[in-house]
Length: 321
Image (cartoon, rainbow, N blue to C red; front, side):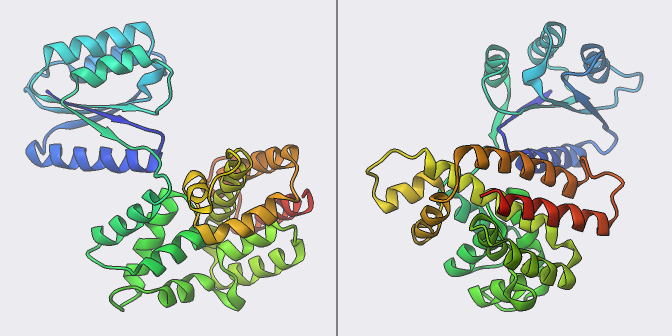
């Protein structure tokens, strides 16, 4: 049995790692059957034992056990037995969502796994490295200015950034991709970029934010998630800035909060007008909005309804400053 532990808080990177490993295993054994099991679900222990058990014709199995930090005692026992017995026909992917929950069991899995893959959120310059790596995945190059512009336009969201890079390389022919390509692609109508709308929200400029948002949505109806990701990234920077130790240099502070040094002046000005309680309320609103844009609480909403929810939420945040 080949066993992998995929550990970290970045769901998108975990999904990508799982898909890659499953594709590799599928090439080695095209007849292998895939099983997806949630560790916290009822009957998970029995489902895992059955999925990894021998079959009549000796067929292989590709098994993904998600959320092992939530594994009950009976499931933990099955996992540890499988790790020690190593049935040859099974590829087992153990997915750990990060954090300290279930640490003892997770550590045992870490020691027994054939390979451990970290899927943590990038920090500081790591975001630029992630974007450059995404361009490399598509066999394309981008300038450092283009990388910075793309991060500012989309925000610190691995899924949104990967999607933005994929769209850019599909639609832009120039090599390397430069800042002008990013600005042209993401600026939309009347310069309504995601980061510009985000800045208007956090600066309390409700009307300019709404006008720019409507221009952008008129040009690209699918622009909403990028705006939410940008606003969420700015909120994270504001919260980190508020909690940063005093006396740090701008370069050290920029690394601490995961922002470009030139962005600090804007962030400081924005933070000066926000109270902690209002930021906390904004975080809740953005989390709800993000779920609605991705289909969580917004299941059943048509595009017009989603636009209304997006507009009203951003306006509420801007006016709560």
